[in-house]
Amino acid sequence: MIEGMQHHLQIIPISAFKDNYIWLMHNGRQAVVVDPGDAVPVLENLQHLNLTLDSILITHHHHDHIGGVDTLLNAYPEAVVYAPKLEKYAFKHRPVGEPDLVQLTTFDLQFSVIDLPGHTLGHIAYYATQADGKNLLFCGDTLFGAGCGRLFEGSPAQMYQSLQKLAALPTETQVYCTHEYTLNNIHFALSLEPNNQALVERLEQTQKIRGMNKPSLRSSIALERATNPFLRCFSPEIQSGLQLKNVDNLKVFSTMRELKNHY
Image (cartoon, rainbow, N blue to C red; front, side, top):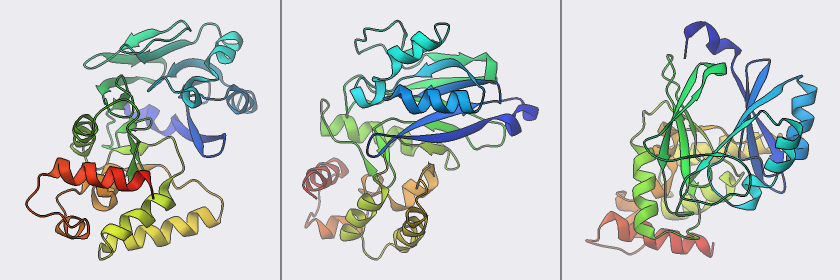
């Protein structure tokens, strides 16, 4: 990202359905939207902000992430859609996967595509570096605030490795998740790691933010590494809480994910 343009790039969450976030990134003229499950609130925001839709980034094929694409393309037929190459889509798109690059020249941004099998087999994320170190990660339903996505298609081993990929990104990376699950996830995390002070503090902060009806997101890799149990399989307290001894981190992850399914 060119230094002078950073101040003009804004990223805002658009609420959709019960708990989805559609991320809209714009420079005051053009916009990119990520996982537009519903076109109506996106069109409202584009019109209100007087923006033209330049492109659409898709992380996976679930309807609550792609349901608005056709309507958006009808309204903005020049918009380019990027979507996972390992999944099938009816709308016109450019298939991408690791190690492809997505060049958004309008925003002077280059996204690296990261393969993240687990939630779905073809799931991807979009990752861009910035000069200020606050890199951008649009991670779909792989990483949530203090949690991770369910395994609808992939194996625990695949999801664990996908999360490890994200955990290895620079700590200041800004994480744009797509669901408002944070409070529930924090309560689950505290049931496993009650003495994690960073987690206790995150609960207080998130309760305050949600009490004002504001999004708990974005997050950061640093915050997730400190408070997300699915990135903390190494924690002795978590392992003890799960009554697991002398097991590998994958077993810890698998056990936690199964518990969370019924939490």
